[in-house]
Amino acid sequence: MRLVWKQLPLASNNPTAQKALKRSSNNLAVVGNKAYVYGGEAKPREPVDDELWVVDLDTNSELWVLVCRTAGDVQTASTKLRPSARVGSALTASGPKLFLWGGRESKEMTACNADLWVYDTAATEAGWECRTVTNDNKDKDVEGAGGCKSVEERSYHAMAVSGDMLYIHAGCPAVGRSANLDSLPITSNSTSITTSSLEWNNHPTAPGPGRGGTVLCPLNLDDKEVLVRYGGFAGHELGSQLDIFHVDIDEWTSIGMPNREGEEGHPLARSVHALVPVTSPVQIAGGQGKKILALMLFGERGPAPAHLGHAGAGQFHQDAWALIRRDDLVSKENPFGLGFEELEQTGEGDAEKVPLARGWFAAGWSEVEGQGGKVVVHGGLNDQNERLGDCWVGRIEV
Image (tube, rainbow, N blue to C red; front, side, top):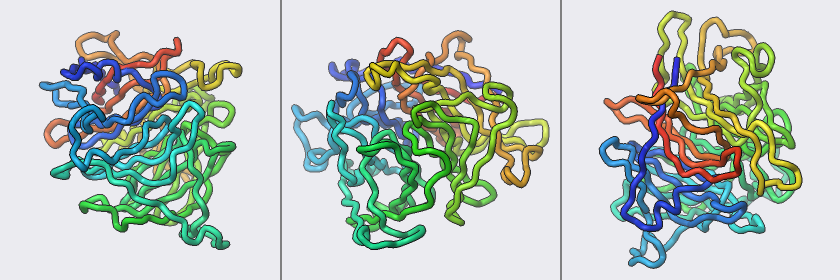
């Protein structure tokens, strides 16, 4: 199994666009054959802009263009309202809609408010909509899922859609790191959110320490919706355990990794990485019911020097792993038979041309009928503490 990479030679007729390419702590979500990019920083803790950018993934028009017009341009009413510039936010897509929540909006790392921003890419006059998020019962002692415990504003959290719920997990609030999992009701197939004001649902706290820079990958296993987590940062990089939230029973379980860390089937610990679901799982020949369900890419393997903190660069992975399902891995602890296998990486037409090691980047999955699927990677931070502006697509070959 291998991942074949191709770098997109992004082009634009907007003079500010090339300058805006390089960023880290950015977001990316894919709708059809377009990757939408929002937020991030070109300097530590300083949001780069408040624009929504789009990368056209069609091989005949690899463009990097603005979706919303800048303040200096003529604006329609729909483009005047927009989220603040931010770093460490989370962006995801469901159907034609983009959902943006959280982050920090200044060098002082001021938290963004808890409102949810929605962008409908299919709307005639597309633009941002703001949905107020409330906790009407937050002062009541309500136990269990469905309670309205106050949800802290935060950055460097993970976010995913499963069914008609938007899940937000972990991250860095004003103090410490969170292990909470909360959700908001959405509808993925209508033109609006279910209500103009949304209310949190609280779910069981995830196992292990609170963390930032983790991932939350939505999968469907045996017609059951699950959210899968690996890694994160809790004062050190985390690994060695795959955590699974079972949506139907509102419960977390965990799977320990085999062998020693770094050996077969056991990825090294990491944070600020990606775990991207493969929309149509890739069947592997050779029996054992083997399928590729998701791709895990790159990430930080060691933090920046303590005296530099967020202003410095850590050390980064350059590896790629397939999250697989295999019959011979099924056990009481691992009922779905999940595991990791490392992928060979090569460049299309040039075996050496693959993405640099990085963390703090953005990634998503694009799958259009008749064209197959591909992972999309943009930006990030390298070992030299440089912001990256490259964009890559990777296809799975088995």
